[in-house]
Length: 545
Image (cartoon, rainbow, N blue to C red; front, top):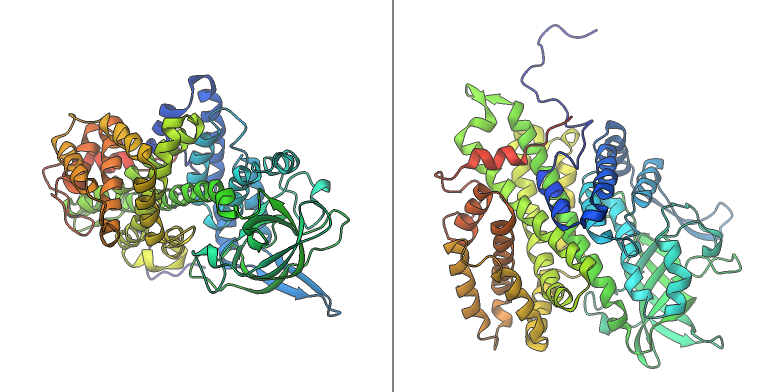
C-alpha cells in the first residue's frame, strides 16, 4: 500500500519506448547527406528499426543487467582441468546477438555500408557500450586479414555474418564468428615494437607456435584473435583461433579479468600463450603494417562510440530539463541552463557530424578520401574522445542529485566516457601520429585543406582559424611539445567547416563564436547570450513517438 505522506510530482517520464534514430536530427541528416539515394530508403528503414529496438524498454533493461552483472572467469572445471572460459549474463548475449544481426560486423561488402554501420554504432553504444568492443574488433579485422587473400576468403564471410553463434567450437562449424585482438604487453603498452611474445615456425606452411603474454586481450570469448609476436623476421601479425580445426582447444590461458572503471559488461583479460598455435597474417616483419587498417577502423569506432555516449548524455539532460520545473518554470527555459544545454548540444553535434563524414570517406575509398582519413581519424580520435568525459559529467550535473544515482543511467555513462580516449592509443599517441603523417605524407595536408576549404568565405571566424592554423603548420620543427595544441586546432577547424556547410545557421554560428572566435569560456555553459540558444537546444531534444 502506498504511503500517504507525499505524492511524487515534478519528475520527468523515462526516456524510453522511442526511435533513437528518428529522434536524433543530427544523425538522420548525416545519413541522408552521405548515403547514396539508391540505398537511402533501405538504410533509413533498417536504422529506424534499430532505433526502435535501441529505445525499447526491454533492450534498455538488458543494458542495465549486462552492466550490473559483469562477466566471471572460470579458469578450471570442477575436476581441475583448465577450461579458460568466461561466463556472461544472458542479457549480454541478447545484446550481442542484436548488434550482430543489425550489421555492426558487416560494413565492408554492401553499398554505403560504413555510413549505415556508423549510424547504427552510434545508436548501439547508447544501449550498452560494452558489446561494441567485440563488434568493433570483428568489423576491423577485415582489412588486416586481407593481407592474406586466402585467409580473407576463409574468414571474411564468417565475420560479416548476421548470425551470433554463441559458444566455443571450430570456426568452420559456426554460422558466424567474432574476433578479438591482443597487441599490448606489460613492458610496452602502445609501443608494440617492444613486444616479447615469440613466434616459432612450425613445419606446416604459415603455422607458428606462440609463447608469451598479452596484458590486454579484449573479448576473450571471441572465436579468433589477431595478435603481434616476434617471428624470426621481426614483428609479425598472427591469427590465433580459440578452437582448432579438429575441435581441440588452443592454448589460451586466461590469467585474470581486468577490474575496469567502465565497460564492465565486457571482459578484458590477461592472456598467456604457451605453445599456442597461430597462423601468420601477411609477411614476417610487417606486423604493424598488416594491422594498421584494423587500428584505423577501431580508432574510428572510438570516435563513433564517444559520439554515441555524448548524444545519449545530451538527450537525457535535455529531456530531464524539458520536464523538470524549478524557480517558477521549466529548467530548459532558464537562460543559464539553456546556455549549458546548448553548449553540450554543440559539442555532441560536432562529434556526430565529424564521425559520419569520416565513415562516408571509408565508403568512398578514393585516393583523396584515403588521404583525408589518414590525418582526420587520429585528429578526431584525439579530440572527440577527449571531449566525451567532461561533456558526460556536465550532462549528469544537469539532472542534479538524480544524475548521481545509478538508476538514472548517468553514472554508467560517466564511467564509460574515458574509455575511448585510452583504447587504441591514448592522446599522445594520436597527436604524434598526426605529426608523423604531416611530416611523411604531404598528400594528407592537401586533403585536409581541400576539405576545410569548401567552407571558406562562409564565416569570418572560421576563415581566421584556418589562417592561424596555416601559420602553425608552416613550422613543424620541434612541434612535438605543442602537438596536442596543433591537433586540437586541426579538429576544431574541421568540425567548424563541416557545421558551416551542413548544420543550421544557429548551430554553426554558435560553434564558430565559441570554439573558433574565442567568445566562449573554459567550461560548458559559457556561450555568448546573444546567440539563438533556444533553437540549438530544441534541435537536440529527443522526441519519443
